[in-house]
Image (tube, rainbow, N blue to C red):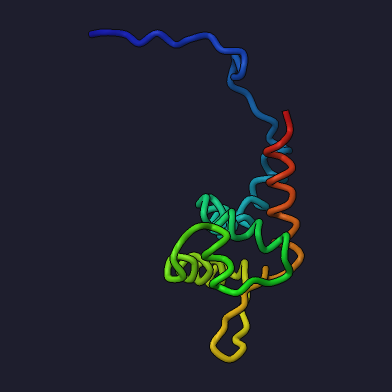
Length: 122
């Protein structure tokens, strides 16, 4: 039988304990985050994040503009935009043969902007 040595780390508790009052207060609230991870999953793709960021810089963009901005085909851009739309992160409008996308609302704009600011912090 071989044993595994556990490294001493300063980022974990040395003893197991918990505050029952805090647990009882916070645990029922945890269910509120259900589904929120899908927003972050959609934005965790580098291409979709670039598109979302581009849409914070411009109020709306044509699919062709998005494709050129990210250096892809219009089919690829459309695929990513459709996913953002399906996740309610973007919306679109059609004008003749052109399709224009924008962020769904100011919350999405804030989410992308805050994530960018956070990533730039040292």
